[in-house]
Length: 537
Ligand code: NGO
Image (cartoon, rainbow, N blue to C red; front, top):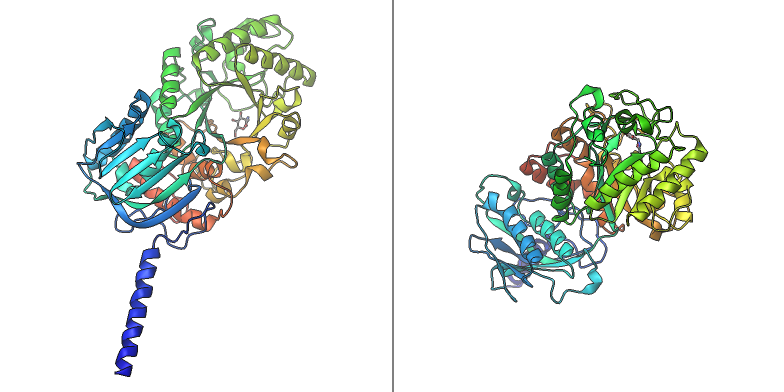
């Protein structure tokens, strides 16, 4: 009897510890404000529900037992019944439809019945700010709450990532469509979470640009910087100077086809991004990187002669004529039209690599351009070289290859971090990468993830960093597939640096979440590089 009882006790103990372990697995995180390294492998298979596969990692994750399952009868409810919230609800319904086959109705209601998804700004904690949200998943429903619509939109991306990877397929899949239960409280670390696309060296269609914007939104980025002009091409219609596109839009690197956006098309891109809570920052590069404009209008050149169009990849040889009044009349017209087309507060004026503009002229020029941008009601952003002028406190410098931007911070202007050694998506992953360049070295998936923007510029305090941006230059890229191959899988890591808290960051833990994201990128049809260091399935 004694032995029997002790064996029984042991069995109970074993059963209890097994149950405890299975309760904890895969929910190994304890409620915390900082992410802790996770011990369970990330997985998106419906039988192993986990909150461990999210990128960017939320500020706080508190898993709970149970799950919510989406069915054909699930409703999406929004409160209050504004067009904006209804549009976010509809965006979610549209994202869930192809794979589930469910046409989930979006309805306005002050509260939601059991079994539904409820999106509301009512009663949200204002300390979550403009982009934060809380997401509560229980077996009886999903509640997404945010003080501002942008927070709801970001929370919708989290809902997508909590569902099985197959939710991203464009054709109907068997399901089941379960999400793990728990509470997420989330808000971004940085206000500026950007990606830049160079449409000047090679031109990309509105549809390709929009596809890229969709991918930025999925990783909670909120800035799309579009590099619209360079030596090789001018890509935005300017009504007061039509030859910019008629002539300057016709060329591209390698004599590949050129192209440009009409003002209507540009507005469409801006509106598409805005519906995804992404601000478009247009860049008109100057005084150098300006050959396409100089080739279009002879009068913009100091010698009055238009150079030929350019299809090479050298940099720094062109310059607007700093001494001519016409130059500023031209720039005032261009910046005026761009400002009128762009609801966002920023205009990027380039300012990089002005190797053929005398140093004193450069200062005069950028100083004047800063005034023009201000006169059109916008904030000037420029590559790090603009730090040399007397900046307005609102102007922003974008660091890319040196510590020049410390001079901007010293003047009280904010800095965006895009160090080529970590954040340039056109750098090759390794010597075998068929696209891209390596002037700043190779940037592996780990390199793009393992750095902290606030410690990369010596002496600049943390609050002077506006955020991070990942530029993608297109000298070697011709198609959307090329764009995807260079951006993925590095962009999700940069998005995480921009969104998630710094504490607890760990490549080996991140790598597992990226493996899980690989299934999602595959389901979306994204042409990503299966970097061996990540260990994609
Ligand atoms: C540099 C240069 C660009 C190139 C890019 C290629 C900046 C700010 N200016 O970055 O014109 O396209 O490198 O990596």
